[in-house]
Image (cartoon, rainbow, N blue to C red; front, side, top):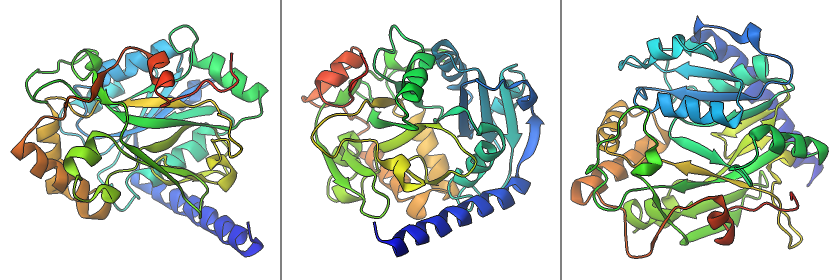
Length: 336
């Protein structure tokens, strides 16, 4: 990398950190239990708005994985989820009425919380509709993965976002609070993915799956990115640039092997497409708080009006992480 390019990225990282510091004033502590966080705790960071129906499964899923504490920003929910989260003994909760869009889609808020509370911890940044999978997750807790990453001097771990959906209409089966969403949304696209390299930040850029196939079929290059780096041994000098798609320093994005081998990686099972999706799409379309004038939600709203079904004859039913490894969607690398 040229010296000038490296210098510009350092300046950009400094700007994102200063911006996050300023945005802290938009957050009001509702239940700040961060004083109970121990030096070796595994932390989850998330933003949420009106995700009350998903929260019971979300919290228990990550508790079972070994997460010790949740740090969540509630963006002015109106469905009672704020009260629910505030009552959880392992959750620290902040509330804001500020613009999600002007906080760089929540990135500024979480960058601040990670600067303040995540330093030295393994931090997992996920949305309430994302379920993290990693090699051997059926037999080994998350701590086993982070211990191996520490022993291997690896500071960041990638996961491809895999859209899950039901067979038939996405609104045919009602989802109940506390239910495993994979009981309904258990199908995915095994192929149909395009991968390129971002020359500026060095991260991979992945697109495809049902959102490209259905909602962006005429312009697949506009489909949402599926590459994420959600698990990082955080340092207060770090900063996410765009969601969890890429970070600075740039070296944290090099989560793949450029010489023909395979580095360990995971998958985020994305359970957005349940019967709640139609209402959520209309709400977010009205709010216009998402990237690019909410073009993604415009496509969603138009697509589900015509045909709220993502399943096709090429869809594959989810079994376990080993199936995803065989399909090349995740890898255990040299972790045995």
